[in-house]
Length: 226
Ligand code: DC
Image (tube, rainbow, N blue to C red; front, side, top):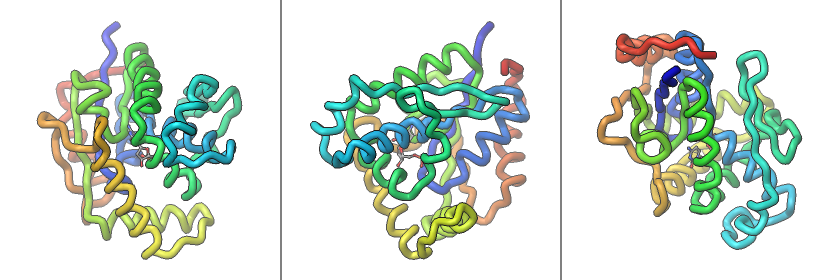
């Protein structure tokens, strides 16, 4: 059976994962969160006491690092060397380290291989930074979600508060700016809108509004492959 892939790229806090999950549910296909894979590598680097910005150090642990993705009750779980680390990946220090290790081409090549093989076997809504431009250039549909820095910071800050992380709005904003610089400024597969991606600015829009907008572009897509 032919699988379908819907790519959603954009900066942190643009609403990609929220929208991707809801669209995947509506289509009865999987949601593949590629950021979680970079976060898992970052977690390993931090656990080993290594510097995420030191390329040689990070590259040295890659051969012995196993990242696995499985679906349990429709939800993605990420395994690091056989351990389910899903619940550890949203911590602010892991996010920061993820953005640093994601600059390293060797890290990307390893994870892109895994992403492509999952997308080959399952129909997915897949979100990330380079999905439409690099991972799946032939995706059935591509979206680029964005929002102002202020709005993205506010959303991320609310999410952090709900999870019990005590960060100020200013701090969250500064970290987002730094991640944008890393994600857009790296040489290898940087974050940018694919030419054929549909641009959606989510600033000031509700989740329902954005889902409906995206859904409106998917009238020619039919899938049920979970
Ligand atoms: O989407 P996220 O916040 O979970 O992503 C964490 C970091 O991983 C982000 O700063 C950039 C990087 N990333 C990437 O470079 N390419 C992807 N496809 C997904 C994430």
